[in-house]
Length: 61
Image (cartoon, rainbow, N blue to C red; front, side):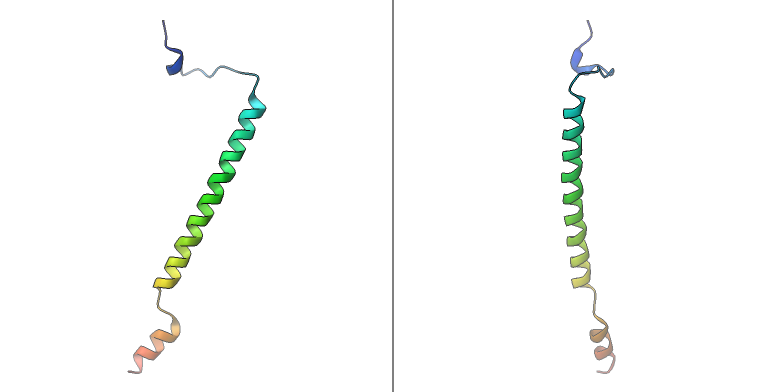
């Protein structure tokens, strides 16, 4: 007797609009979180990079 939890065959159900809504919601949350992470990484990269003014002033000393 096969275990229903391990079945590789997806059985159709009548709740597909709910599944679609849930997937869309999860995707929007994931996209929002990724955009925040990208902005944070860009901010850290900008803070770590020397500015043009800093590079020019260090050459004169």
